[in-house]
Amino acid sequence: MSEKLPAEPGSAIRQGVVQADAAWRALLEAARRTRDEDGFAPGPDAAEPAANSVRDPHIDAGGGLLVRDSGGRWARGASVPAEAAALLDLYLPVCNARPESPLTVGHLGQSLDGYIATDSGDSNFVTGPANIVHLHRMRALCDAIVVGAGTIASDDPRLTTRLVEGANPVRVVLDPSRRLDARYGVFSDGQAETILICDEQGAANGAESCGLAEVIGVPVDAGRLDLEALLARFAERGLAAVFVEGGGRTVSRFLEAGLLDRLQIAIAPLVTGAGTPGLRLPGCDEMAECLRPAHRVFSMGDDVLFDCDLGAGASPPRGATQQQEQLSRIV
Ligand SMILES: NC(=O)c1ccc[n+]([C@@H]2O[C@H](COP(=O)([O-])OP(=O)(O)OC[C@H]3O[C@@H](n4cnc5c(N)ncnc54)[C@H](OP(=O)(O)O)[C@@H]3O)[C@@H](O)[C@H]2O)c1
Picture 1 (cartoon, rainbow, N blue to C red):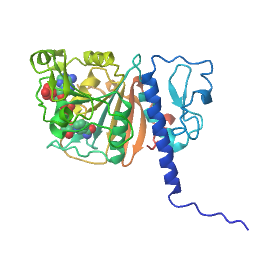
Picture 2 (picture 1 turned 120 degrees about the vertical axis):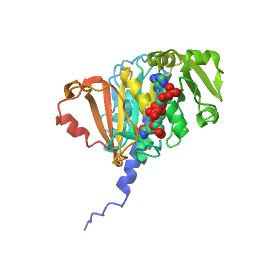
Picture 3 (picture 1 turned 120 degrees about the horizontal axis):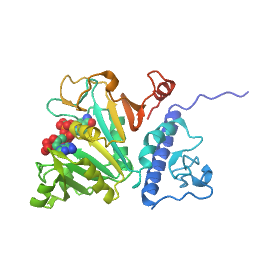
Picture 4 (picture 1 turned 60 degrees about the horizontal axis):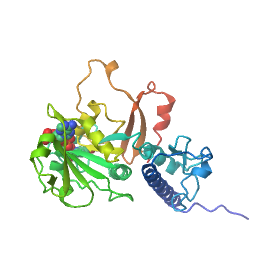
């Protein structure tokens, strides 16, 4: 008599972790290959997934997690387990960034009432562990991470990838008037290449370094750094994927300048009542004028991540099938 044994407790969870791990390694490998290649020339068999999949047995044990299309862009393979699929979908746009098609992504983690820190500046932590791991993954896939002087002064963050496998990005601090000194960790810990961006005058008059960080001058107009010029400087250095991690003023200025390709807002089930606001932009008079970007929704622990595609135009009408499906994506 045959008897069906009950599934081993925890085995499904373990399997999910293994699949997510394989997906993450495939993404790292895809991003590395995209950046390392000096232009991708698809071979005659580019349409054949098996010939173009990420082949390293350690990252693609199941075969074909990622494949390349005829334009050289990475895409999800045909039969990918659900645990890996959401991860691949979320990060593939970053893997496809290259010098001729760079990508700038802004991220903020905010409370239900729209704040990224309390009134005292405390932001450790607004969002939960899953979103923090997401930040580290974004750092690992991007070439540069950008933060404002306010974030360095308030948090003294390390801006490394210590929670995930993957290299540290170049750390970039926007400090137009050189208000920060070399005591902060990013300028002294030597963990990653670090650049301080200030106005051209400050770079010419001041020291050429801040601790271990290089100082680069960028034009400033009415107190605002010319962010287009900044991205051009990044391009000169081959920094194609740029992650703007905060705070609110910094992400807002990139958004207002029309320089974000994607905007990620993670909302935590938390009410601070007051604090440092997230996005701060000139308001609209009417709802019809408001920015309503196409977006995907990912569940991250207790938090919800809106991943907005600012290059893709407005989203379908509310309640459209596409959005309903996206609500089930769990990373
Ligand atoms: N929850 C989150 O996702 C998150 C993420 C990061 C930080 N935080 C928190 O947010 C707070 C800091 O945010 P914040 O909005 O006050 O400051 P911020 O964005 O970190 O820094 C703003 C400052 O950076 C400089 N800056 C940035 N972009 C500039 C531009 N385009 N042109 C000229 N200067 C520019 C300016 O320095 P000057 O003032 O010297 O001109 C500006 O005041 C902290 O409490 C931190 O803990 C939260």
